[in-house]
Image (tube, helix red, strand yellow):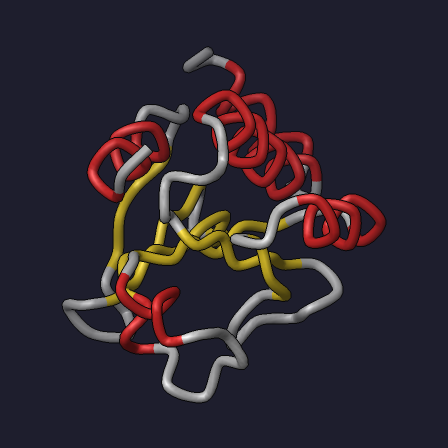
Length: 131
């Protein structure tokens, strides 16, 4: 999936919205004002410990269970600890085409579900009305 396909998938989530709190070049995806993903170009990750090739792609940050986050980093070279995020709970996914679409969608779905699961019951119920 490329950046536009990922953005479309993120915005298709119930009550998902797009914000630019860090400037026009960093897209922040929220559900009920809670962030569940970001997309930015890898060139913004100046201090990231990756090869220069990775900085030519868009990167997506997504929330993840800590044990799964580490497992995914071991399996996929294009997944690293969340850049400028809590590295225990967030992964950065380099959108270089190496990760299958189904796996990207699964990770996005999990990020969304994790964020929603931490919301109040009232907010969870209002989101479920859109499913």
